[in-house]
Length: 141
Image (cartoon, rainbow, N blue to C red; front, side):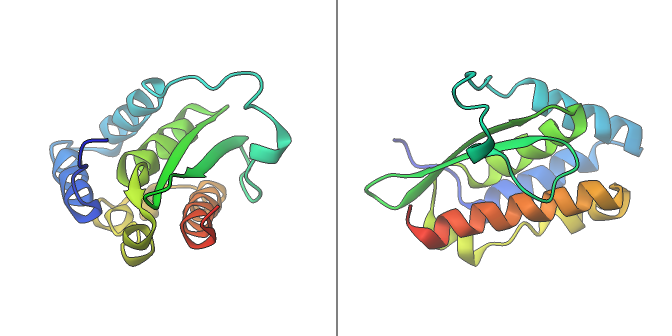
């Protein structure tokens, strides 16, 4: 697998990407477009064991870890904005070393103002996603 940019570089890139949008409607559209670009999960993957708890929308997150200690993530949601949030998290953390995931919380969320523009239920769902990704890194699956 080719070397991925570091988590901090990806987060900085996202902050820069979001700075180009003047208002939150444009930012939401961008988030939705990111979600639309996610690869589809198979019916076999859309099972309860892959569902995250704590999300109002249905969020499926598949977590795996390779022999080199990189965490691999795939996911989707039944809600457009939430699917975009899944895409954001995968962009930052998929394929990253477990230790790097644990050492680099998703600071871009606050830096782009996303935490101030999400409903409480979406914020809870995003927190559940972050926890699940960190748990996968911690667990060594």
